[in-house]
Image (cartoon, rainbow, N blue to C red; front, side):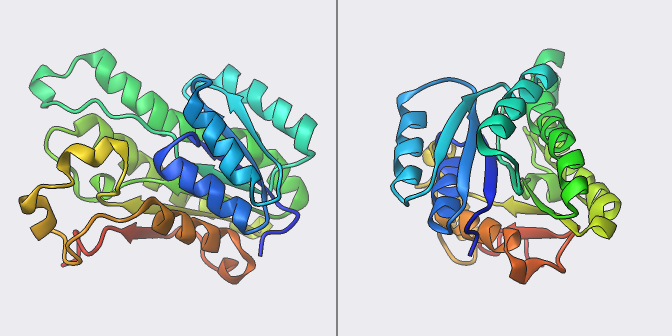
Length: 245
């Protein structure tokens, strides 16, 4: 489906990010993924994605730092030749009520989740414009749609990602470049392990389970393919019906 394409995934070492790397690799794309540190998890992602018979490389980079992102993309272009697909998945949380939230805690979450998305899009923007093709997929959250108590920083950052997605879609649509967002609810990852057994949470989800990382990744692969060429500026909730009204 994506043979010959090069996909860049941020936050690719574990959770949804690892599933994204593996799913894009299985779809035939070469994969370059960014992660904050070199780790056994990052090595495992590289090995599992590479097992699909494509090239997969990791790049150590803090997406909140524009200069680090720029340097990482320069390496990717030098080694892969181009970029066709960008998936912004890197994200952090620092949950607490606003009353006790420090300014630096708000700043860190917004810089990683929102600025990080800007920083990477800034790198592929001219590349995609020259080719008059490209796919940008931003991982947001249902918290960015409905808000969440104790997550003012996270919700604000993810709402910003949605607005950024729609703006970029309008800027780049005339050049045959799409930009969409996926807004997961609860997903089976290390970040949500503490909530997975909560009956209260499960009862709030119509399908009575958390999404699997692979299900989020499958949607991203679809949005990167030719069959989704007319879809842009859209936000796809993948929350098991949590936010349906």
